[in-house]
Amino acid sequence: MKQNQELNRRQWLGHAAGAAALLVGASPLGASAAEPWPTKPVKIVVPFNAGGATDTVARVIGEKLSARLGQPVLVDNKGGAAGILGTDAVAKAAPDGYTLVLSLSTSLLINQFLYTKMPYNPQRDLALVSLIAVAPTVLVVNASLPVSNGAELMAYMAKNKGKLSYGSWGVGSQAHLAGAHMSQAQDAEMSHVAYKGEAPMLQDLIGGQIQMAFASALGAKPHIETGKLKAIGVTGEQRMTVLPNVPTLPEQGLKDEVYRTSGWVGMAAPAKTPVDIVQKISSEVRAVCALPDVKERIASMGFMAVGNTPEQFGTFYKREYPVWERLVKQSGAQLD
Image 1 (cartoon, one colour):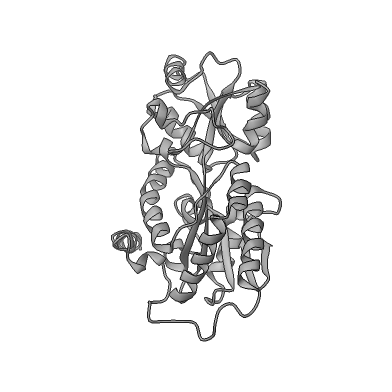
Image 2 (cartoon, helix red, strand yellow; image 1 turned 45 degrees about the horizontal axis):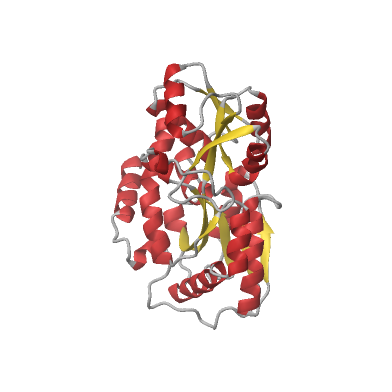
């Protein structure tokens, strides 16, 4: 069984980046909708509770899509099991373009490495529509740490082997995987402390119970501005609009692909959704993501709006896949 699964995965990853196969399960180009789309309300499932950043992005996108499509676009929150429940509901929905998922890289990519048993397979059961936004994180440290940049932090970690702790908002989260990699790369033997959410993690970081963490810009910015935390750098290739004076980690010489990688928010449809519908949705989403007010709203949350084609999303996904697979294996994280 494992050999078959690995063979299937390698075959999928071996497809040409720009090929239609990277729609990940969409019906072939010859297949089309039986009637014009849309003729009724469209539902965007967010596999997390209402009020979070992903939910906010979905509502911003949904409102603009509704105006463009002439149909209501409803946001349906189906939280639970790290995004698995809501994403699975979409994977099993009718492939007609009326049920979509807008979710994080967690449920669309990373969970398949963290769980040995998943009710859906992202490559088999979902068709990629568009990468909505990338979500860099900011590496922050307790204000008392005698470091101010990436090089100083790495040196400090090496000199204090086994004495430091880093936090995350849960086992298998981006904060956990990036922190584990940082610790192993520096042979720092840092302890990992997992919290039930980012807020308690940041409070303990401010209090000195842990020394460093990767955090969202939205959560960390107020504490950076008051001097309670020090920002070392941000992940990804570009500085954040909300933290323009904080350099990226790659800018500081941390060239490892882990520091170039960010979390992200993407949209997908059930597999076998006709390609003409997938392309139509993607075209509309790209137009929405390009609107100045949408870009500004997404930027205010510490994200960067993208909006791309299914083929471009497929290429991006293919590049991200081995990075997160390696990080999960390296960390030893397992959630079932």
